[in-house]
Length: 174
Image (cartoon, rainbow, N blue to C red; front, side, top):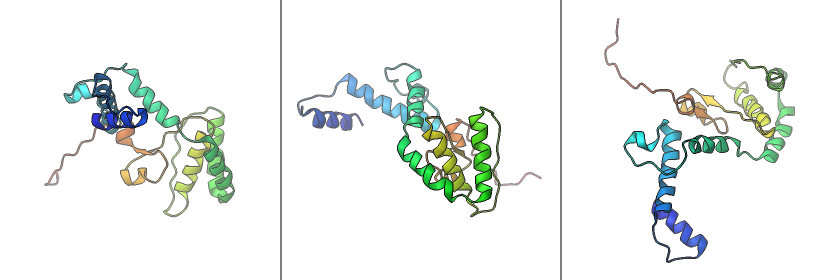
């Protein structure tokens, strides 16, 4: 990875004589640590690797930047296009959620309906509306398949750093 960074710097700066240095090595460690943190919630030190030179909060700031880097104009257009396409039940849920957000009321909302009723469409519009307003909307799903359906969605295990217990028991316990 450090070699790739060195190559990118050489190409962008038109300095083919640039040699590997500590800053490039550290930048590679930063990228590796960011990936490890996002994938398993661990810093490199906890994985037995050398730590990059940075402040601890930088990991969390990068995650915040990732969450906020949506294009607001594109999201506005998506909302304006899709809200009129909602059926009355979707519009009722959408208005309920937007009112709760606008009023600053917290709460848990569960959306349960048969397949093909537009739950993903509805939640995509809700997420786009919140993000278009420059607010933070984090979508979390119970499985990797479900996480692929919503923009910026992650599994609960990844987003919330939940432990993953993969013990397999061959014999049922009666």
